[in-house]
Image 1: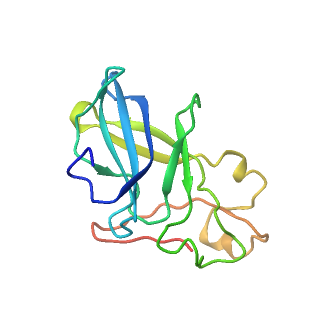
Image 2: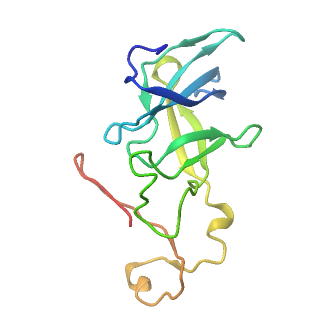
Amino acid sequence: GPFPELPEGAYEVSDLFPLVDEGGTERWIFKTDILPGFATQGVTRYFVGDFDGTTFTPLTDALVVDHGPDFYAAQHIARSSPDAWMAWLSSWAYALDQPTEPFRGQLTVPRTLRLIGSGADARLAQSPQLGGLVDGCPLAETAADADVVEGDAFHVLATVDAGEDAQLAFF
């Protein structure tokens, strides 16, 4: 491939779009997804760099967008404000044998994008755009409230103090 530090495989759904770093400089994000996918390493990689209209020049090595298998083929939402993207909420590792039924091929929640840092130290930061997804959902503000909130969907706000080697999962 064009970048020797990327794993071997077919590059899919590549994207190139600008974001402004914390120093106020427009940088470009080159993102690509790698098939067959590397579930333990993340399948979507990106570079922060410069683009002169013809050539992309990376300032960083390849960086992992998401460390799980279920964020594939992300699409930048052009002209969105703030910048955002969505991805396929699945993996080619099990796409033909989905672990959940009847769902197949859904998309992730849109993620707002921004750059933290500047120049070669800039890193992509993402946060969910929940917007209308949580409107009307009961909100449990304390653990005690969780026992009495009723409904099929919930809006959960949590602060987690995880140690350096801790892992957190939601099911």
